[in-house]
Image (cartoon, rainbow, N blue to C red; front, top):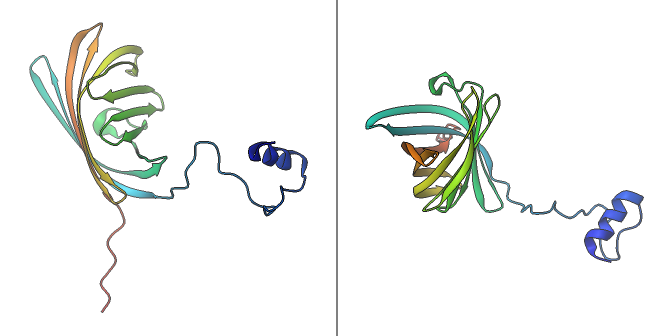
Length: 184
């Protein structure tokens, strides 16, 4: 019998643990590493969107949560009035400089996958209805560490293979806690 099955039977039936293991030991949940880095951060986002030759810039300074799970960084924050998506939670899953997945939850749900050189069909909710968009990742540069850092990526969106917009996003993450006062 595998260790996992033994622990399942212990939890279910209250049997004694296998020899050599203390009674209160439980295996980590499947796919979970024991990384504990999680903190409140200041997030600076600068987005540039090019549509039909016209450039639109948006800048946002907000707070959020920054954490590491299974070797990837996650950044989560609430959208504000400035973005027109007040109350929607955005979570970025950053896999080094390989892939960025942007998930939005709330009244408008979306998932965009940005991967350099790959085109993904993604679900995008406009708030008035859902559409499928093509997302082609142009560039991803992640200089994130446990302390924070900078994430810079660009991608293009298409609808029915017709170019809708070209986008560039730069996100700076830094600790929200003020530095400790010097000891005198």
